[in-house]
Length: 506
Image (cartoon, helix red, strand yellow):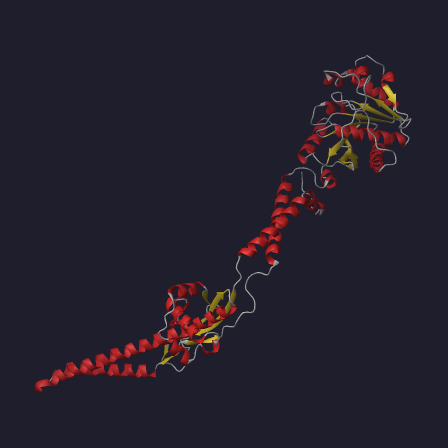
């Protein structure tokens, strides 16, 4: 069946309405789950200190020259989170406490030297520290999290200061080691020159030249070291005591849980709905098959024996009145008066529809006959009827009953005595003669037949009729079955007067 290009909102709202209790249950379950999951998550305070990293040693008037070449930010991240820096940070906290502004003072740093915090405290502190680089720059963020806001700020600020001091100490140590190495080499060279001149000997020229050149290089190296400056960087944004936790607000857990529950439920509903082949937009989908939809008619779900009709002034009767008006309009246009009324798979709804349409037609002034041709399950009449007439056991006049209590124009020819060979009766010449006879005597003949996909009876009868009215059960008939049923009528050259869509009566 071709898909309609028209967006029908009811196609999406109808499945939700059908499964609304499930959707609501999923939303509530998601809200409850979100609430409990949020309770299991600890809320932490976060504080951040920002550090600008610079080249450790510079011989330039501009300390930022060639920064990218001299700074490896990946290494710096690791250094900032190292055990040594964390130990120094905890020592600073032990000395200065809550006075964050004094963390980088000489007094605090001097007092913190030599203090060694417990290993467990260091390990716990390292778990609370994160360091990252801002946008591939030389700026690091030191983020500390703790259940106590003051301690989060203390740890972030102390780590930032300890990191800068560690870089400074490492640079100074490197300069001192380089200076000591140059001093040692200079002494060694001078001692070697003294040995060459010892005892009044004249040293070889190239030996003297080599020593002099190396001493000159050492002199230049000393000059470079003396002009070098150490700038490890600085804390450009101090840590502050956070005012609120970084955790989600109280309502976020239930809210997110409810939203996820709703999304899951709606997705599942639409998956189930897409697998359901029943009609969603009956008028649109049936019209695409080239079949006119006469209207929607209510049917009673409870099984009844005999004819079941809506009261004349009831809402149900009004629905059938509109349907029969559409049907009679089509009949007047096409000159059809003997119509087979059949369902797709089941005949119970079609029998109910046939009886009510016949009653409405009779009340509109048409002489109407309702024929119970569903010989397998006759719902219309007990006793003498169609099968008896076809088999010659009763006359047509004796088998037809007038339902004057409904309307004087309303006659019924019931199914008659049950038979073991209904197909033979409906395919016989005698049956054709009966149909021709009643066709002449009535303005409208509605023949109630079995479902098209149940047995071949409805297709056989349709050959004798001017058209077929197909009753579609909106609650059970699938698109595939409807198309197959209409295809069977078309295959034998029978036209379809229209389709009536049934729904449960309220």
